[in-house]
Length: 519
Image (cartoon, rainbow, N blue to C red):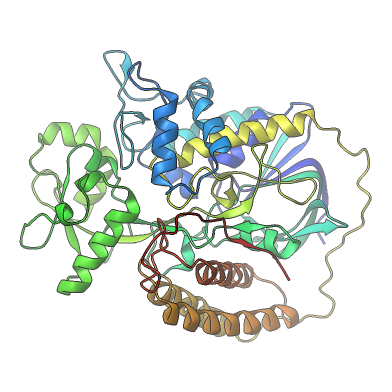
């Protein structure tokens, strides 16, 4: 059996939120960062667009706050939103200190716009902002002797005793053993849950692990009905839902039907720059009404050299697939993209369990409301990672961890039915796509709930009798998170933002957050 570990702080997740938390924590603390795959394999790395911040003299905080509240359909927490917006310029500075070099024109930030923004306030590094942030944050982490990285380790469950978190049980994918990581403070930075859906822009790591673990531990899980579908993922058999950044629409790209006709004017005066929920529903409706497999995004009227310098990643990937974006329109479809709900936290990233924090997409800080405004997600990661680290650094840590929590697998056996896991995995994602997608109804949601509830029973029984594997851990979390999403969707008796129910097409004048907790 491998040695178990003790650290002052355990960070589960190696995206922008996890790595920034590690960097900002006190150098006097011993820190472990758990990466489910390779450190750079996660949603943060693939974020193309940028990070929003008031950096233009003609822009102001109040405008950014108002845009965020409006895009979130008045369900956002104004205190959290104000905190994030007012700390956004500092977040840009913090990233620059790590080595991130934002794109500039004439020595000024090359600020662009995206859906929901009323000003140019999206700072970017060409079309690979997330990649630049991740690479530079990782370089800083590796310079610190008090931080230890664990690659290809996946958390199984949190260790919680009497309302306090003392770390997690973690599966080593290489040795195939479960190891106890004891810690005085634990930060969940595991990302979202969009792999719950059949079609997603997310990498394979986004299986809702942190949300499911937190739920099982007794955390409040808030607003999980709000899954954001990105309107434009490349529709190609070999693209694996390659994301076509919203900044193309910010720079003037047009959405077209296969016959070349525009259609966004039928849905919103802001056309292609309407918030994502509106654009995704518009595309979904046109595809369903006309029986189209996809719609098209046209950028070919722009200068070819400018296109390739502004969007090198997208140009190159499309070229590899035989598409010249400077000369032809791109086939696109919506895909599950971002989890607006999550583990309920305050502005210091504290959950309702002592010593347990959550940052990034896994958390519900209240800044997104019913619909995330573009490029507020990387911003949320950086701002709340810092406030989380500051809170922990100022906290008094327990001298000795008062627990003995060895992993026990004496009563389980190796699985001989791995085909069951693959079948249930696919079934969940198919149910979620067909019954809990962009447009919902009571009947479809009730049907999904019964199916997902039964799958959860099967998965939990399987987990009870067999030795854990990576696939079983992810399936268990995917099933749990999917059930929470459906429960949340059923409890919201209105249509608001990313949650559109045909049986409740109108938005209530007053509404509350949806909170799901373990019975």
